[in-house]
Length: 320
Image (tube, rainbow, N blue to C red; front, top):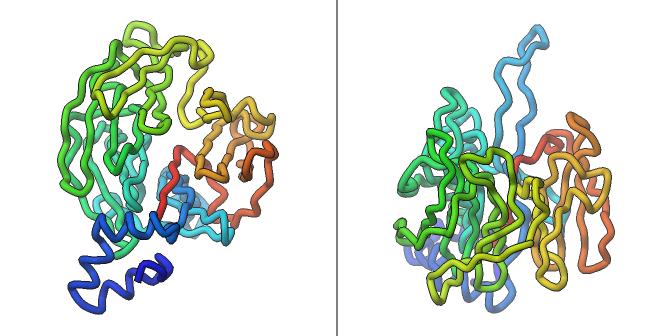
């Protein structure tokens, strides 16, 4: 059963309860991963095509959904809408993955623009969303990433725009949140990068220095449960959101500086042997979509259907 393609899991899970429980189990996922039967794809929070009325005018404001790009087959798909937000995801929500699942957290309510603490988990086996336990507080623009199947969120700001130094860990399987040791300082609009068994919170700024992005970062080691401050990891004054990449020697760089065609609104998703990158050459310009394969450091343009050509707000790699 570990050899069957993930796209057939939904049908296979309907055979009986035992098959369903097996296909959704953590042990089965790691067996597939160990035998190299999993499949990596880029998961993107992307703007949806505008809907217009009979007069040609837009019938709703900008909205976002979850798109999935498979770099092996070159296919694009869109995940079903979250039932609580059928017309579009919360603005600026964070997306990450855990053991083959997509996890969407936080953001702003698309109708009221109020910050939300909702958590939604998408199961590829059943192709359905379930609502997880809310985040411990309303947070926006925080860093997130996965370590050993658990999701870490750190920094960001609260509903009053106060920058945060708090950090939390979410166990998707148990649907539980655990508070972690706080970082050494507040970090709003920071970026999360996973390096081996460490989670790095890159840059960000304090409440009193709005937009003054710092060059430092903080490393969380899963074994010790402590944060370690690291200086001179990012260019001072530069926003790291979505564009932070990890180089050959473990050094960070900005994908926006990689090529002039992706210098604005850059988003990079690293998937091991490949990296998905998108962006524009100027503000408001058309989106360009590319793959960087291996270590050849060359952008290879991707042909994208019109319905998937919208702006990418954020993304992550999901191993299904």
